[in-house]
Image (cartoon, rainbow, N blue to C red; front, side, top):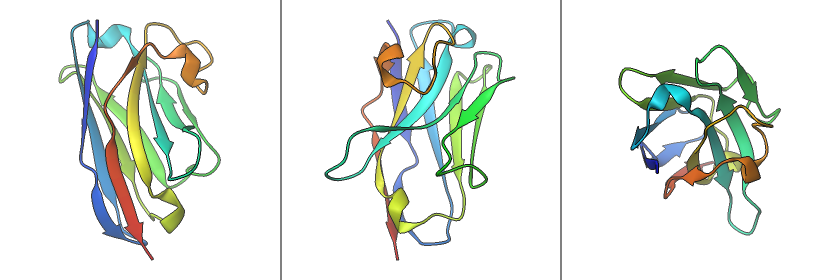
Length: 124
């Protein structure tokens, strides 16, 4: 089993920045590929970004490319999401997810483990 705990959400003005963290436990972190997803009110959960177990490969959704950056620190069992130039449409609950492979990282069905989510609200 893998436990994931997100932190770092909050309220920020448009144009501002936030950094989300996701701490993992229960399994060797360096064997996990990690993803961030988000769900806005009234919408389905959508893919944001993913990073391979080694950190060598990343995939970004077009909506955040150039503004968000994913990184990981395998020594700290933590993955980060640096969010810059935030927009009102980035408002959502952000979820961290993990899978034991690098299988179609944009698809949430491939992730076996999920955190509880952290709220990000961007005021315009």
